[in-house]
Length: 408
Image 1 (cartoon, rainbow, N blue to C red):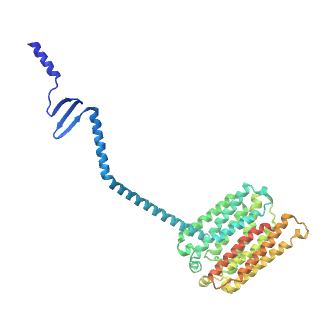
Image 2: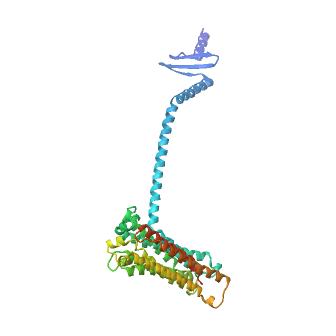
Image 3: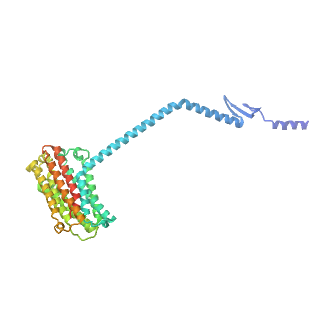
């Protein structure tokens, strides 16, 4: 009896006790435990049941995506398209603003004077060169120092003139950035000061005495020409105004930059050549014409603001023909200088000299002919015609610098 009771107790311990809500079942798929908590069921059916549950979840997710994806895609595409359109619009506006400012800066620099500075300094810098061996990196660097500092000073001078001529330019040149309001006075002042500092920084760094002197004289004359202060504002006086332009464009550019290249860069004794003397004399005539002619289209504004230019005193027609006669005389002198060359008189003629002589004589002859043909079609009452002819004179100015290196 005792053995039977103990055996039954052991069997009872091995057999799992029934639990409320838990039922153990055995079928062909294996052991399945189902635990019931209210209406929820948790089932463990082994590896196959987990895979089935995972597949059901993935299938349900795909169904949800199929139901909602078209709407979500449309909304997402709409948002992305709006963002792209907004970004493109902002980019276009930025590009337009930048392009406007660049165009305004281009006209603020007075491009015809910039081109004149580039061509003039390049031509004069070639005069000390004797052979191709002179064209080294050191020479190139010296030339770039002179050119960059002169261009910065050029922007300072023309910018300063616009700062003090805003009211006059509203009458004479309303399209200029400061007169039109494209640039504020503060912007113009910052640009002028920045380029002045850049010019002197480059000049001082070069340690070239001729270059630094040229920059200092340009700074003084450019400031005296424009600044409205006692003993300054030289542009009110016709003689002082013409003297400023003549000295800078004719004397300073030729002699100072020639000395910079020959003495400072090439380390040679300063010895003026025939070409640099010719360039100085010829450009005195040309600079006088530029100084006089530039006031012809500005007569109305100059009269209103009391600027006594020669065009105001003598009248545009007289000043115009005075300019034409000065240029024709200069071209005639250039032709005679070439034809009466000392080498030609001594019959010391070489092929390079003959080529240079032909270019000098016929080049100046063609320029004189072009000037005379254009002068006959001039109408002093037409402002557009005056401006066009003034730009034509600057083109003649550029062309002359291409002929100067051929003077021997």
